Length: 169
Image (spheres, rainbow, N blue to C red):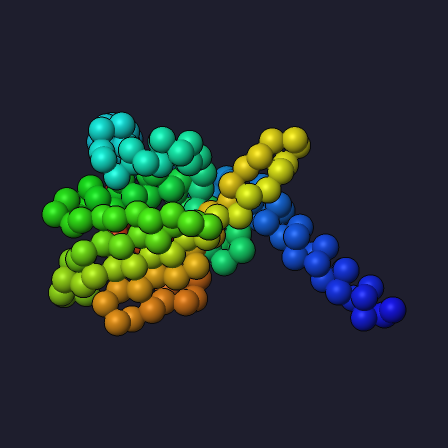
């Protein structure tokens, strides 16, 4: 009986984590500079990368790191646009299924060109009778390195999207 109670309590706490973190962190969202916002918007409207995302009504919700403890970073469309605008020759492929698997053929990073894989998990939740998606950054791999800590993943994404910002992480 006590084990069932502990499991139920743990389940309730885990289920509530994304709600509080998402609401509390909204003020800390990364912002694209005003000088780059036009280029980002134009890219989102005209790029083939976003055709399927628009077709399937994928919401442009923010990406968080590690169960919404860190972030939010940029909204998903802005994040992809900033990666492409920072690395214009890179080829980005997005596959979906429970989230997004983003494969980039190469990015100039750490004095070399490296393939990049980014895994973003999608969690659907209902908040005030509205369905929302929460995107959680699960993994960032550059070449053979896999980043797992929130600080490493955040810093790596900030470097990959650096053209859209003029401030440090």
